[in-house]
Length: 303
Image (tube, rainbow, N blue to C red; front, side, top):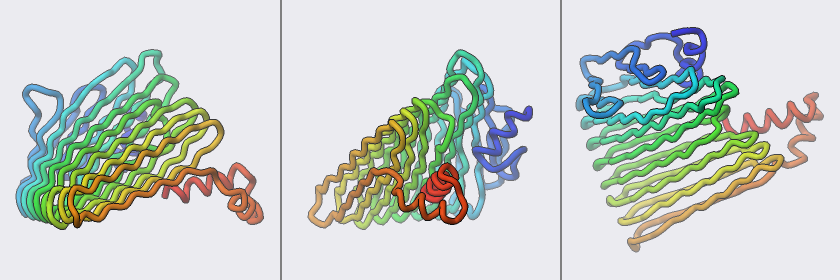
């Protein structure tokens, strides 16, 4: 890896070199290295770009790193990764994509991730997107989640700079007692566009989900947040979208909940607004100028 690629790797995954444990690092359209462990196997797909990741039942406290780096223009790819998590496993999966593009031709990465989470398994999934350079950078992640009884998944997705266009789609189906927690953080500026779509089916008794999105829209950027939760059993669902809007930006929030069972308990909330003037004034009295005050407020909001 060159210095630019190492920088992007650190931005999206917190590492700068080959990690310990199971991993696959993809750069400019191909894998530069992959490793498995005794409990986690990473197998390249035969017919599509991507991998099958098999995590044995009972695997505990292991990490899987699957970062994607694009460091040139003109690359467009769709990658399929399938995760098969065994019963009672407890793992952390660190994904994400970073694009450095200073060329006229756009670069695009579409990552299609599908999770098959077995009974009583626990998964923490972290995904960070980042872009830099004068060329166009496009990211379109799709996440499909199938959760067996008693399983748990926490998704933490972050995109805070440099991506010109993104459409994020997450679909999930939950069986009895399964729980899905989604936390999204997003910032757009200039003429960037970002669209988020969640579709969650609470099919099992006592299944539950919490979906929260925090975003900041600057410049002339546009954001759309669409969240659909279907309560098809005795279940609990909560959807929340909070956005700060600045300059000439636009934000559209469309929370939708549907109860198809008399014991489905569903809540949705959405709030869009500007930074309060008194917040800025309070920080300026502490010695910050206006720009520094706004930056501190945004950082705290997205923390």
